[in-house]
Image 1 (cartoon, rainbow, N blue to C red):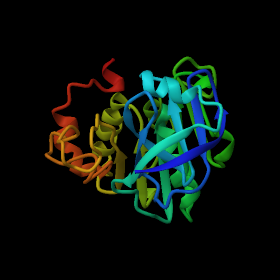
Image 2: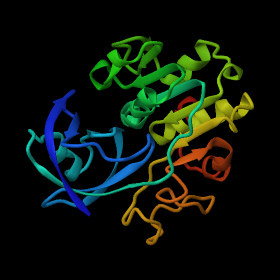
Image 3: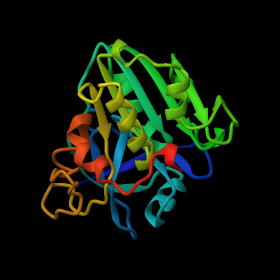
Length: 244
């Protein structure tokens, strides 16, 4: 473990902040850090750039992180996990805080990139101004298309054959819907999903993040090719967007 100071904090909304670290962490987009917050638990967080993590307040630890002012010290382990692979023509599909690792990927790729980005409301959209070719949906219609990002993809008649790689990150319900859509369009092999699961160790020993396919999110993931996830989504109890 090593320590890093939070140099400054960008407060995007009441529940979402980006913590800018004092230096870059040698890493690739899709990898994560195990972050130890003094007085709280250690949690996994994706990098949103080589020197930042973007956090949404969900549990006690993330609520504390979102309220940071700058100057705080974090205990860091990592980076860990498998990263996204490069491509020449890319489609990025993000939901909610899933934009964090995909923002890192967007700036890392030397490629033509199209972004589809969905959130519950305008307040939850972050980094929007950084994307050139971006299509946006919000559940409440406060910005862009009214509906979820999978519905927007269908409405836009996206031709998945035009892309070398399709990168996906978001909540489980969204990812299940995306899996079904990409399977229907025979695009699973060219897709990469960033999967989130509860983790204790981050190094593959505890088994807390093992998926239904027997793979560990912290070691064999968190980025998986879409066709590797068939046992995960086919057996999943999560309903898709269309089923809700």
